[in-house]
Length: 270
Length: 203
Image (cartoon, rainbow over all chains, first blue to last red; front, side, top):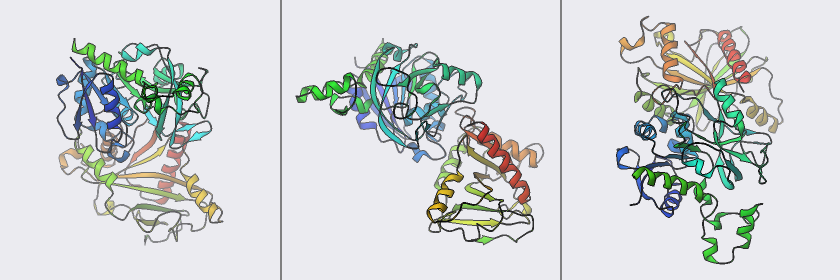
């Protein structure tokens, strides 16, 4: 039986097609839920908030969507241990709604502030490298892996005013994924650290690890053909060496994250 | 652009809003009404510029300080606050907001430099949210809508604490001040100065 994954479309979302396609390739039965539809968390085994500009980023990116009725259902699903993935704008919604880190009664402990890295600022669309941290939950299946993935955002800098949360971010204990250089060395400034996130965090998970706010776009790296030929490292070499349509349509670096998500949703079915 | 009576307090300020109903404020108001607790009866969003460096840089604001095709401005050069109906019992509250660590004045300085003009000294700006008092008088606070009640209501409506509380300000990335509308330009200047310091310290 295929795991049932709900794809939540707030008005202004624009990455739902490619996200649904990549989830389906990972083995999920994807149901699109449009703005205003009722979300019954019991009817699904996993939940994905795709990227885009929900509500035109009015007030702040993700802020208005995070006040939607869907958030209560997502909170209950997270409590129940079901996998929840927010990609880019979806990550901003999860942060503004307090689902990550999701402690202390879903208090909002973080913000995704405007990009302000060393040598970079404002909206940025480029390929970066991320390394997945050792953590509980489904993203932890990929712990230690390092792969290229595109980012496209203006507000992707994880920050907090809470000293304890800041310390956790800076030390890397809270980050589920961090930006690194292609060889795995810490990303210090542009181009490999696109936004100046504390601890170079690219994603932050909930304490149990089943809810993940991930700023890069794995669905834009789901096929090898999407990888730029000029990218350094193993994936760039693979792309340059691909000669046939079958090779170009083989899984790309971002597919592993979506595979891990769908695997977790499948386990939730059992 | 309308203009407040000129005064001798020194400095000038400009409040810029959209000429048409602001979709951001309308969406924010709808979201606030869906949250627990009293919601403002109305909500307006604008940009406040303060200049304390001498001269009258906001006298002809079109081009740098506002886009005359879609925005309008009200200048305050002294006397009573021309941006609020409080004198007529409006009872509104204000929330001033700045991104932590940001320098929003830099954009205006660049625009002036491109025109060959020297950026004025003593410039500060912030986003201003104006919150109308709750329609239900019983929701206006124990003090019947006094300054302390207004600040408390603005704080509750504005500052994000959880998915069910607050919307306009995420304190992790934004500095803010909740206040009753300042009566004088000097008070506005003092408040904006505090806000800018707080935003810079927390960058």
